[in-house]
Image (cartoon, rainbow, N blue to C red; front, side, top):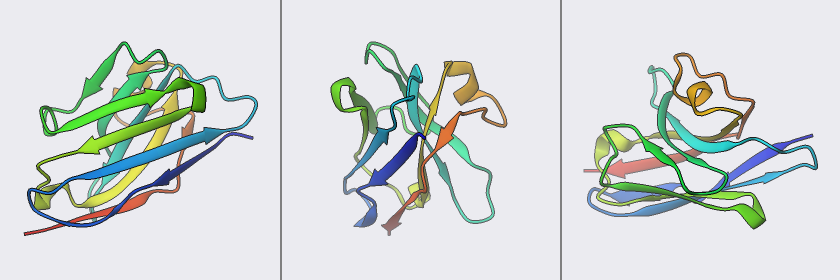
Amino acid sequence: QVQLVESGGGLVQAGGSLRLSCAASGSSFSSNFMGWFRQAPGEERDFVAAVSRSGRNTYYADSVKGRFTISIDNARNTVFLQMNSLKPEDTAVYYCAAAEWIRYMTSIPPRTAYWGQGTQVTVSS
């Protein structure tokens, strides 16, 4: 059984930084893409960023381009999201996800194979 476990959320002031981690476990884990979504109260779950398992291809939502960086440690099946210049509007629960194809990540609604349990990120003004 595949599990995605996030860590690294917390409270930070506007302009600060946080780094999220997500470790995938399970012998059957073979998704080609890993990524992050976020969901604010009363809002839909939105795509944030994704990366191919090789690390060669990255994808970002316009709202985080230039501020967030996604990376992957393929040997450890772990994906990271470095979040800089955080804004109050970045406040949300952040979910790790995995999917076979990038279009499954960016479709509305997303068609990911696996979800993590979520980690809260709160940015104070």
